[in-house]
Length: 154
Image 1: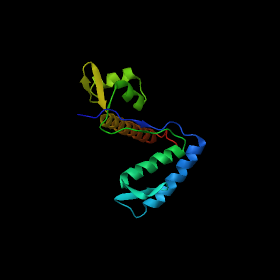
Image 2: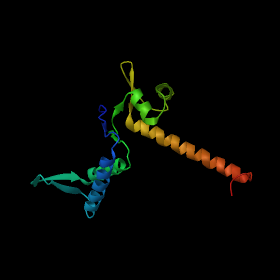
Image 3: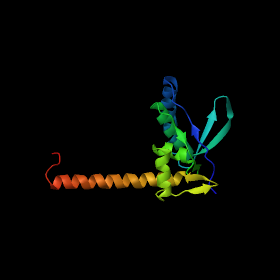
């Protein structure tokens, strides 16, 4: 059974937060050199206690900090999270009605909980990847056709 959505969101950072995020990301990235498994962190308030973090978690934290440094709000969603139709629609930037049509046409797998549909985040991302590849292939074909007709840019 998939987990409930546990979404952690940062909100849009202010200038001070963005600056601090950039400095923190750079400092953490420098400390990662030579690490491949875990990273030990000590806080100045209690230097006796060391916290061991998985390398992947620190890389994720650096990515989050870099996004904040750019002034972006950030959300973390587990890949096995189940989303409501509204949450799923918001994530792929479509209307809820359009998403429901995608579900009904089996473009995106889903399950029903009573009368409500639930969509796995991983299935939503797979749909996005499929449509991205299809758009790219269509653009490649259009480019090829325009070049063969001599109407492409030079």
